[in-house]
Length: 78
Image 1 (cartoon, rainbow, N blue to C red):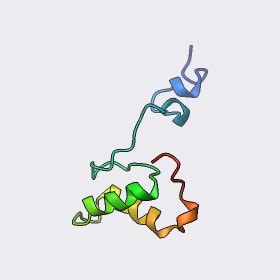
Image 2 (cartoon, rainbow, N blue to C red):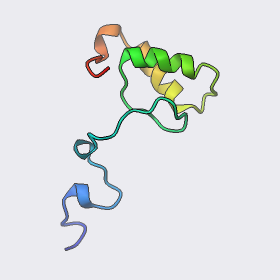
Image 3 (spheres, rainbow, N blue to C red):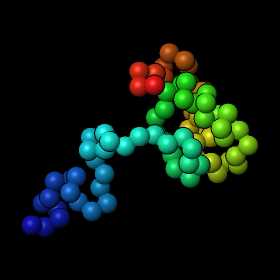
């Protein structure tokens, strides 16, 4: 079977978000984007990363979440 014929989730370098339900957000690692995070987690992460440089990916994600209106951020998975 050629890779072009394989389902997308089996192709090298392809990560189907539906198959990644076991992954969790890690707000402690500065080099990894934690993905979508609830507002409450963003507030805690802001305290953890307040002294980080602009290279910190968590700090960037926190800024996005806290800049959004409070009712537009999903907090159902906190």
